[in-house]
Image (cartoon, rainbow, N blue to C red; front, side, top):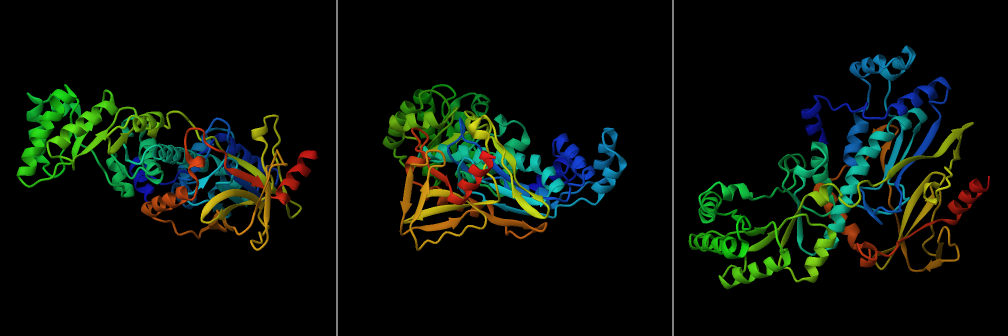
Length: 481
């Protein structure tokens, strides 16, 4: 697994077992004292709707797998926990032999999911399932958030986007794993060199304003850069005056490069009216015979800016996006949660439900699966079913809104696909982790399965996510109790 190279370099260990909240450990100890630790429990990870994203791109599973595989309490962990003065010695003895023995199913990375759909389901002895909540949410929440932001940005333009966010990320972990997630979401290059090394992401970059300012003149700075990197020459043209000096000087340098048999890449704009400047720069480059030179743009770009630049006929080929991508600037958290949906009682798994005065916090009970309904290759709706349900595609399928039950849709000549796959079985990894490139290709395919009205960032239409009749009946039964 790739991410452990970074973890090892940073912490001298790949054991992140204490990457948890204290109350997970106090509950583990309490379950053990109450003889509940071995009772089988099932938890779902999902994100809520509300003010967040209308869809999400699953990411972070690889790091979650690494965490589970390396889960153990070493002597240093136990010594630290002993120093807290909370637990008795028999708890530490139990921790010495702790390992994950349960099952995990999950939606593969790069797949689109929607609010309240299980991204992952953990089925394990209660104290094992309780411990891993915090870490799994950390890995999946963050990367899914950034992958989703990247997908939304890509939805706003047909041009390429490169991830430029390391310097604005909330720390090195956020920068490194954010670059990985952005790749999954569609930003297939990064400025982040260590992410490029760890995850085999193509790296890109040019020079900053300080390079230009370090020379006596702009033209000298451009000439020296072109001399050093004749086949990688991308010039930042807005240090002094974009149209009066930056672009004209870049054209002079490009003329010399081409005369000597080299192909310049293009120019970068980092300030000002990007639509106006890009149109003017494009005309100047074309008139000088440099139609093949690209125009790159940076400068606090987000979905609104991309849509505005499209409407203003901007002549930009590639966007470099940093702050607004790596921080998911307009939506600080995915809001993923980890909720108990079934618990063993007297040898039988009993569905559980959390009820709240806040409608969005009432959960769906029981062990579930997600079935995606397709017609003519396009996703039509998702159906949350109980684990043992089988859909007969030879018969019409009627689904209904879980609250406004009079809203119904009937499908004929359709196909279905279950989204979740087995990751761990009896504590053993049974999933072949795809490469990051393969995950990116899976995301491209998943995005393409949805009509534009479900993907767009303005006036987004609500994609149908309904409950099967059997699951709806179970939920109503528990609510009525």
